[in-house]
Image (cartoon, rainbow, N blue to C red; front, side, top):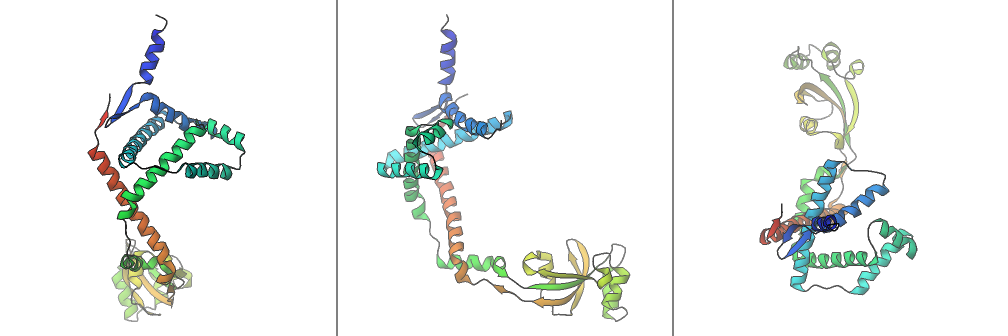
Length: 297
């Protein structure tokens, strides 16, 4: 009878929690991954709460299912990697850690790993990358015209220098902004006089002058309002962040756009990453849809 508790513990540890096609993930497999994560929390002096632990377990299980799907594809296509490349990656990690062999192994042990487990992780990742290189990367193409279109669509992001010098009248709710503008246009009040009489915004003592602002700092409301204005023009009322404003343009420096040739490589890289992520998500979704995945209660 004394062996019954041990048998019960073994049953729980070996309980199947998910089957992926013809392979299984047990409670023991998941707990091993959890131990690695928990050791990292411990090293950082942290302790996750119950809700966070559940989220970690779910994320780890999802990751294990994905790994199993990729491993099955790797086996299906007979993908292999050179063992010298695996060892070279181990050596690179060791060098980057600035640890000798003994200290490096101790660090692995604290993370719940040994050298064989590390090599297997690296081997699996390399096989996965080769698989994705064939199934994902070869389907991704970024053309010159797409790069140019992205530049034009985001051109304001590449604007440098330049800005505007503004004076404003922020008209209070109990005053008609149209009436204030009429008085300015008819010459009944100068802009500065209208500021003193009506504005409840900044710069009242300096004729509504709010200083210079760079074009890159202006939001869409300001850019739309300033479009087409020349120096000394007065415009309004316009709606800025839901409030009526009368604007006087005191100065305007145009600035320049960073040339396409200077940013095309970074745009290309960004578009390539976006496309790869999209194709990767579609590929993974297809693997899951084709697979028989059963969660055991």
